[in-house]
Picture 1 (cartoon, rainbow, N blue to C red):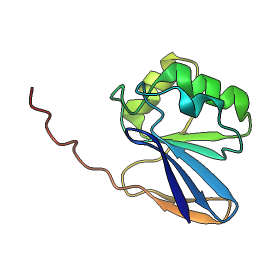
Picture 2: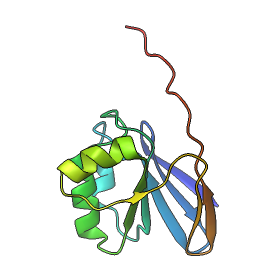
Picture 3: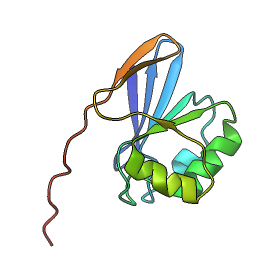
Picture 4: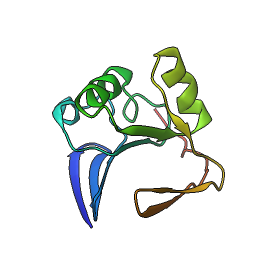
Length: 112
C-alpha cells in the first residue's frame, strides 16, 4: 500500500490494483488532473473534504471511477448531478479486490 498526500485531507491510496482518492476538497486543485482513479471516497460534506467542481473534473478524467459516500454528502452530490454509491453506518463492500467498511461517527466540534 502507498499513500500520497495531495493536500489537507486529500489522499491518493494505492492498494494492489486499486487506486482511491479521498476527500477532494477546496484546498487544492492538484487532485483534479489525476488519472487512474478507481474510486473517490468522500467522508463528509465540509468544503475542505468535498468540492463538487473538483469531483466533476476528476470524473471527467476518470469516467469509470465511482464516488462512494454517505447520505449527507450524497445530498450535495445529487444537487450537483454527480452519481454516487451510498456507503454508511456499518456497511461493508468490495472495490476490485479490496474490502471497505464504513464507520459512522460524529465530526469533532470546531471551535472558532
